[in-house]
Length: 429
Image (cartoon, rainbow, N blue to C red; front, top):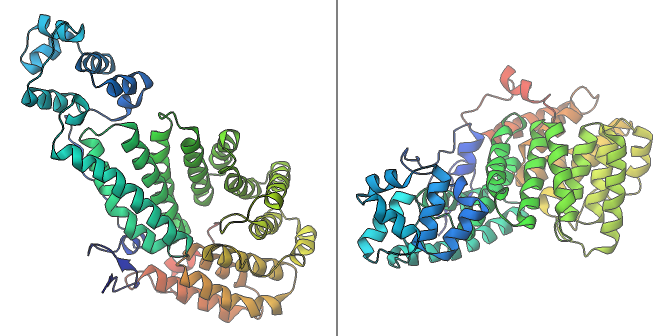
């Protein structure tokens, strides 16, 4: 029988505390400590350093390390207990160290995994197992999120992130491990961006930004485009619109065919929030053309593009165009992922309220609250509250939204009637 969180009912895979509840409650997601003696991983991601690591030759790796750190041969010799001339001979491939214990000691000194220097033992097997386990975990977490269960995705992913961060700090700086960590960091930020309320979204942007710090150094354009897209979208949600547009335009410039649809959706959203009408119109047109010919998916289809356009028109103050668009689209997005269905329904309600169709908005808003609660989307509940607040006939719905937001935040958060809670309702998503 699967363990579940006693607060939110989300599945717990290893008995650890619920990450979603910790994050929603404002508790930090602590990472393993980093020893001051360990070399930072970023210099090892330079192309020349990665090329040296790929050879497995101590001579090349030692020379690269000295170039990275600026250490002299004399300093290395003193640290390792060798003579200057011996280090010079190693770097010029005139001498080698074959003793397994010594190679392991040198690997620790250089801040790399022993298997890079050919020390194949149980740790090497664990490394290869970690890569396979990591890929599987990322896939399962993605499935959970796309099924409308972002909290479950977080609890699936967090133990992997902890293990990867620790292993990388212990010297596993190979491209495969760094790529896995970058994707895990990015996914963690995106999933946090689903379940956190608006006022806490800087946390999700921090995690997607950490992913970007890695992909900037990897020779993987698709991975970098994905990281840019995720970070740009989280920056938008956190309110950094200039940064969001900049990152998303960078992503659009390098994204391949598989990534481009979701990049356009995020860029159109950011352009509307930033008040950039021309960029919004151009991007939406590109997305519409792509949606008309691309195979639909739960994360990109014509319904999603229509929702993005409708919401963007509202944000840009183009109400007459929004009113025309409203009657040409479905109230829901039945072919989309559950979270997109909730978002689309709330956007429809927002458009109805903005165009004076209050009765229809009142009919759909309770359903929207239910959908957002089921997917644990506090930002969308906050949207409902803003739509309903101050509108005659929607007062009870606004109050229902406040109670739902309180439920999602957990029992220790401020009550729905408190000033602290009401202050959250006016924050722009």
